[in-house]
Length: 391
Image 1: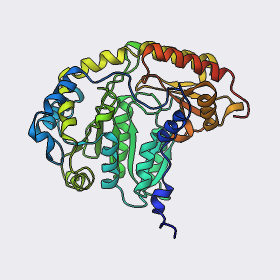
Image 2 (image 1 turned 180 degrees about the vertical axis):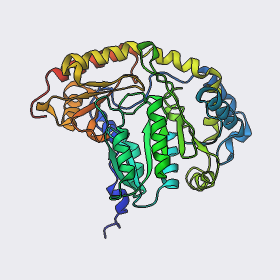
Image 3 (image 1 turned 180 degrees about the horizontal axis):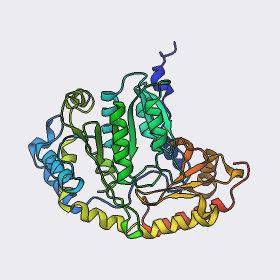
Image 4 (image 1 turned 90 degrees about the vertical axis):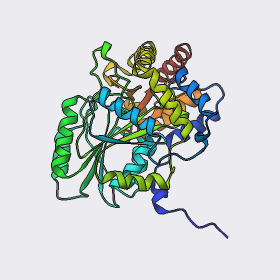
């Protein structure tokens, strides 16, 4: 007798593209990844030393408060004040910023509510919204991949289609690799406020700014309708420790977030919080030193993409760790191109279709050490130079 079917809601949810890429890599020996958004560095010694000390402490084995260790939350609030200029937000620690976004999707949206994502969007955001049965509304972007706020203003005022309850901005962008200007953030907040909508800002890559290259710095904003998300994964090289946090406006939202938090993780892993608190001793300066070390890999990968696909077809690079590259019209099937590069040239990237942006590929320049990145760039150049017209 056959097993009952899973829910229609989860069946309708997109398959995770990173899992697909991982499976693709397992089948090919020696493949190099420019796909998953990770960094090649390990956490600072202050983090690993704190984790080692935590193993000797009895409370590490217990539950903590649902929203995180008091000492850690206090340190995060101080960081928000000093680095982000945020003084009126409360903090909930989560098991990574993906869980933070899921907490929000469940807490803010009802079935059928409209939720705006600007394509190219972060695929896990789309999956979270699909799991809540929200109606995803794809926003327009300009030629530089910046959100089109004229479109947003008109859509928020529209009387047809699902009413927009939540707008998501990723700053700097994943997968766009674009830093959002402060004026754009302020205007988006104003438009959402006027329409009675939440603005969710995902700041997972806040430290990945490139001011020496003439790019703008990262900025945040705080308002009663704004929720900010942050992560320790990329900045401190703590992907597997799963620590993120929500900075949310004081008021009734907190109690609703606690319902989700207590049901899903109960609390974030205590040892990971202690390690993250240790990482904060090294702080922003340590992270910015690691980010500065990405300049050569970034320059190398961008050079390969511009050489093979044309400078005018390469977007991003002002923030985060990604570049978006437009494929030639003769090889517009980005999924087929990704499979070709992986199988024939042993280098892996992400198809733009996974981000609602078909005809492009997302390339990450932070996940390999510089010497290995050189080999990956060589393979990428060879593969893009010889793209089959049928791809």
